[in-house]
Image (tube, rainbow, N blue to C red; front, side):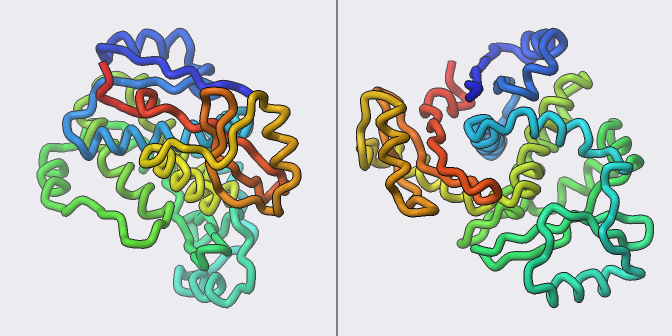
Amino acid sequence: MQKANALEFSATNDAVEWLKRNRKEVLVGSIVIIAGAANSEQHEALRNSRIALHFILERNEAGAFEEFFKNFNNKDSFTPVLSFSTKEEADAWLEAHPAPPHGAFVGVGQLRYHVAYARELKHRKLLPLPTQEEWARMEEEPEQEEVEEESNHPPPKLGAEFHLFDLLNVVCFYLYEMEQRMSSPEEIEALKTAKIAFHFVMDTGEEHGFKEYLETLRSSMVSPAALQSFSTREEAESWLARQPEPPPPVVVAIGRDLYSVGYNRRHQMRLLLRIPTPQVLDTRAP
């Protein structure tokens, strides 16, 4: 399993230079910390982005994420399985389907939508994909009038019940604020990587798994005591093999490291996901 290397830079320029030399490594195994957050909400957005990247890397899906990243805005890779004349027709199909094909794409006219379905959470939604023109507009410096208009919009908030879609909206809102203060394509690319990480988790159908990972991470910070402790990973994996399928989301210790017990529903695999330390997740750490 690939390990995530937490790289912290005291200045944005240092991070940019590192990104220029190691762009591929950002996608396949390293988490870059750019000290550019201006408020607590932006710090939290960076922290949640870092958790999403840890979740992907600990599941040994760095290669799949790299491929997903490269094709994320490639319209040729978004071949729709069905096409509809109107969004209303597409929504009606989604609601009537007993088990919508998570990760598939449907077309509505010239637009493309990503089918998101979380069976455990009884949640289904069509997520619009940005067009090439929209990506280009997002990467350009916005007009002053647009900035003033957007500043009047209230920021999105998380609901009482966890939904990865809501978390994505909140994270993107504050990362977009950060983008407005960044000047180089490399910086914007790093934030784009963070956003796409959430899309990747949804595309793999692991909203429920990510929710469990967040819960075990939070419980480990409140009470660091692990359910079970092991000297070696082999001992932990032997214990995990005897657990129900899927195993309960609990925290175990291997040596001095804490791990979240997870489950890859797509491949029906039991997982031990290393929990990052508070120091690694703290975007304000010196």
